[in-house]
Image 1 (cartoon, one colour):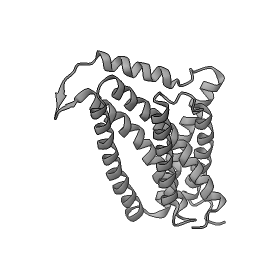
Image 2 (image 1 turned 90 degrees about the horizontal axis):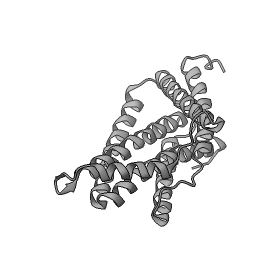
Image 3 (image 1 turned 135 degrees about the vertical axis):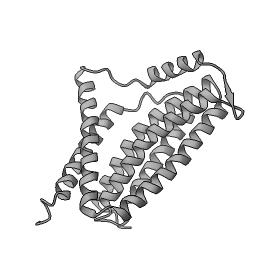
Image 4 (image 1 turned 45 degrees about the vertical axis):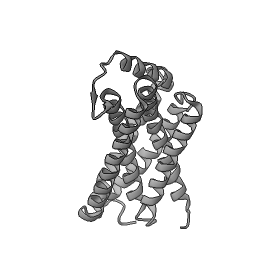
Length: 223
């Protein structure tokens, strides 16, 4: 596969965006594992990953086979633009001091405190609170990763048939890196420059989104 500048940009954007989401999911699972039950936390994580795999496969096939190219471009572009503007807004507000910076240590302590105050009901032999919180955290953060992978990957397939594969590989690499570093550190990854990453990815998302939304409307077809 020939790696062009566009493909490298796709890989970098997907990697950075996915890493931010994986860091937040890792914090939740770590808090549940240390405060409640590692077995329940890891089982919830595995169940969420399985559900995300199914969602990704179904959504990807549906978008490729049942949606026309122009509609797909318009939908992808609009979603990328909205998502990117949201990330840019958060990054700018935090950088300007109008909003507090995201603190993984504080989020970790809050999750632990919630875990300590919760009941200890069990279902299927698992600490149900740890299972459900881990499942929900990984699934919701993972949905954003799925959105990023599908939209970035499909937007690149017009220029490179391996676009979806590159996006998926970048997201998997980001997830593995976060897990490995987190396991070694055994603590929340508070040193990750999340706000800078959000700002960079926000710019990429809004740029790609604007281009694809406009092209989906047919304005650029004459070129």
